[in-house]
Image 1: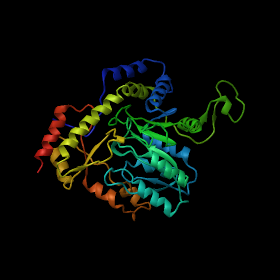
Image 2: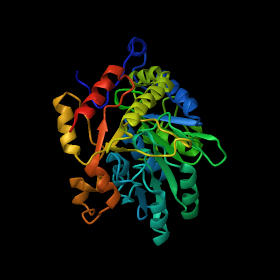
Image 3: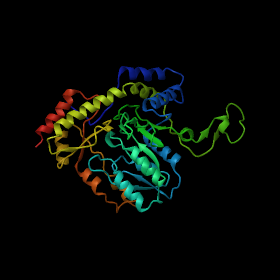
Image 4: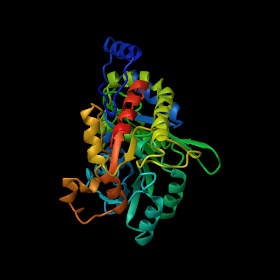
Length: 382
């Protein structure tokens, strides 16, 4: 039995949706993209959604929209894929890493507040990551942001379908935009829904929405009401700023729209898988992500354990064709960051976390016998 740490699930309905687009008049810049955006916005409770060719492009464009002053820093967690901070560096911006909470593996909001208090005028925004599917308490983060005049771009690439109950006992979905200016999602094949490659930004701010749309397509404006000079005719458009070709195709959007219909079922399945892992591990010497389960709904993109014998366990599982993974090397430890001003950074919690972190197989198409196979070999590991 061969078990990857994650993989996509593709149904006949998904295939049919893609084939329908292949037979249509539009392979890109057509109605499937708009429909996917509209339906995704409804699912997460946001006013607007903008598709991108991938989540890195979404993060980059989101930062370009939010950026106020490149001399002011952006706070980012070190426990994430490099794109979460790279998006700032693409624009020659400044990032500062703040350590994680050793229980949740998310950025520690107490440390965020302490960092801001030391130099309150040095920062312009924060990019929190809902690591492994566990949402950040963006209500509390909003209070901090208001105090220090920060914007928030929530990286929810792990957390489609997740959320939390706020102080009024209202359920706040990731992407709803109640507390964040922008929220970014990923549709990579190992995520909750797949488009092949793809990303999305949600927002409730119409001005930001229109800016995202323009930057996504070369900085070009076609709306007559927003042109700098009078239209020359029906063909006329203006490139008003330096943008990108970050568009999603209708092929990808059709797959995403089809997969979106199964999101709730996928989240439910991932939580059942997580429960079995937690039930097994609760009496073991392997720790896992701990959080207030009454408050937070974890989307469980990943199921990460902490093992003092991580390398041995990784190798042992691999010999039995169980392919675990490590998420992540602290971003500032990557060679590029080490060579560009981050060599002196040392954050105790994330480095301790990294030494022990191992992601067990977690995907909504995982069969019961596959998980039992993993659990059986965890039991046999000595």
